Length: 420
Image 1 (spheres, rainbow, N blue to C red):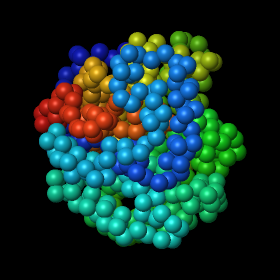
Image 2: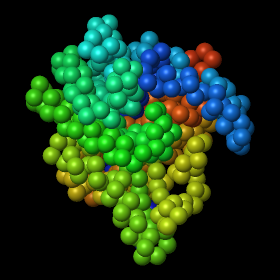
Image 3: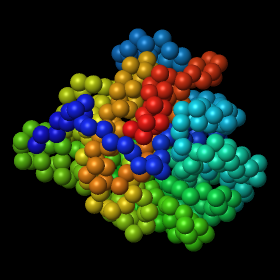
Image 4: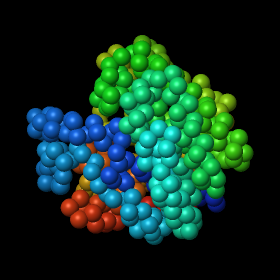
């Protein structure tokens, strides 16, 4: 199998009018001062993460930046980048960069801080967020669940509870009533990533390691999506509702037939199993692409000739193959996340160009891609890794919270304005 694509020789084409260009954020990663299950967990685990980081080797440019992995405050979200108060300023930057769409999440723990009690002030806040986007001609893509949950829901058993979908159903009904002018709704962000990190690997809250719990959580997340889909369409028949799936490009290592079979299994289990289970209840598929894996019995053996600051392999070609495989669902596709941790902005420009070229190639072969959202608009709090990974088109000075548009963001702007 020859998967080497010479992207630099690929003839460009113009993206169609109406194609959505933008970036993405999630509430907990940028807003600041959230009280939820994650913020409580951060306080408990920050020092242990700092101690673990001391034992690792780090590039000098990572250690010199503030906060570094060796700082305990790196692992506590705190005020994050204060997007909660600066969202208009940040959306002005997005508009200056020619974005016409933006993906963000509504923080459940703000809206329903106590079970059954909805905070009118926070409802109004997100009303202002949506209005601010629309005033700038930026299409809102609303994510309803991006991994953080209210403390009361965590204490009730969260996604392990058989009635978990009913709790979320109540939240969704309120949200749709509050914001009926939103067209694009994402129910859940990366259900399998959340379930595996929290209930198989045990590295995210509640740090459980149980195959049975993993299966239960995935089942409840599937039920939750289906109920949310029905609620949104009942109230807003013209809405577009989908889920966001983290996809990995699996290819067999070498020509070993066993590696080929293992790659087929990994591809089905990780990329397609969940999507297959909700086929009739998705109007579009959100595609998050970051990872490539050459599969062998040791499961992954990547050359990693080019990597991000986080050590993730840079492999844009995989996006083309993923998009081609998802064509079978006959649903519109949006690349809802695709980004690189690159504090010095050395590789981001080429990363964006190469991934967009792969999208163009797929579209030329009749794959229905309708939008691209770079991750992320802003540097942000990268979950258990903290602040040191820098994904933003807009850099953040964490001492002053000053925003700084990176050169790669201006290149992305030119691509948008040229429609490819």
